Amino acid sequence: MRDRGRRQTSLVKSVQQGRRRRPPVRLRYLVLLLFCLGLYYAVSPPPEAPGIQEVLPDSAMVQPGLQKADQESAVPEPVVSEFRVKRGDTFYGILKDLGVDDDSIMALASKKLDGVSLSSLIAGKTYRVISRNDEAVEYQYEPDETRIIRVTFDEEHPAVSIEAIPYTKKLVTLSGTVEDSLFRAISDIGEEPMLAMDLSEVFAWQIDFFRDLRKGDSFKVLVEKSYRDGEFVRYGKILSAQFVNSGTRHMAFLYQPDNGRGDYFDEEGGSLRKQFLKAPLSFRRISSGFSKRRLHPVTGKVVPHMGVDYVAPIGTPIRAIGDGKIVMKKKDSVNGRIIKIRHNSTYSSAYAHMNSFASGMGNGVRVNQGQIIGYVGRSGRATGPHLHFAMYRNGRYVNPRTVNVPRASSVPKGDMQAYLKLVDERTAILAAGEFEAALSSKD
Image 1 (cartoon, one colour):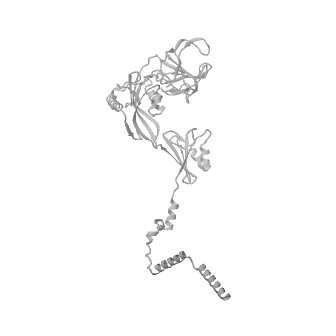
Image 2 (cartoon, rainbow, N blue to C red):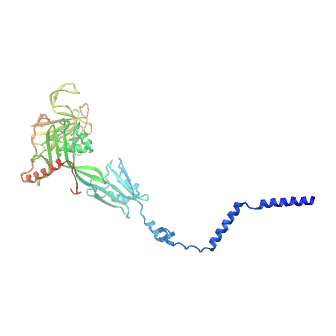
Image 3 (tube, one colour):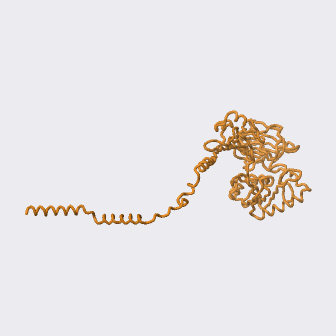
């Protein structure tokens, strides 16, 4: 019994151990699946190898030597850095910072191109440095609005050249209506203040743009506009203009006779330019007029005021009212800085309390009508910044605002036919409204 029992016990254990060793059903299925897949690939023919063109990208077909050459020949994009000339900056210092040797700088500084010295820099103007791979290859400086100086460092020795700045020019018509000032009217149509200055100078003999303007006055202008790289830069000549002031229409046409200088004339060929401007400042306020009896604001005494006082900010340009010669330029305790101009044998004018004289002014110097001779200030006996302006006829004071002066020359008779044709053409353009035409850079 014991042996039988032992045998049964051993059998049970062996069966149990056999059950434990038997793999699970899922594992058997997995093994069977793998066996079948292996058998399938063993008896199936191998697939055709795809063509090389199907698996290799285009770049892999380029020969390694050519690819390397292309990478080495690629030129990096230039980097343009713009700077502003500061007070104390020098041509030598700027080029020295760019790594140019002393001998090359001195050779360049001694050169003059088209009358421009390379070493002359004006504070506030901009210059540019063009570089590649952090190394300067060109220096650019614009001495004025028409020319650009280039110094290139690509060669063993720097090369220098001066070129005309490329501008795109357009001829356009502009129009507007005055609400409170000409500056505001110009700004309302999206234009710059300089156009207001230019327009006021065209009609400076017909309209006092401080005292005579009225709400509702209107203007039309045919003017040149210059652009650089698509950006507006400046205005050119006003070719024709119309200004309606207090219901009176004034017309102006720029015309240059065969034997003469360009000037503005009316529809009939009469000159707009009179012998004298109506005032020496474009925009100002009159604080004291011409009077035989005026209470002096400093001394407190009643004395004659033989001139007109124009209040304007310090630094406002003062213009000669007519052609003439400076017969007095001085500074004293009463008039401060003063200039007196003799225009002809009959008329003279004086300008007092200047902040400073314009460059080149001196006794005996001839000046032209509209030329800047100084700047508004408060030198001498003055309570605030203003210009005291006086006029003389045959040595005696006259009221500048009421004196009658003759016009300048009209269009010559031999030019009248050509001039009247021009008047018709430009009048039609102004009347048509919006107008725009491209101009040659030589126009």
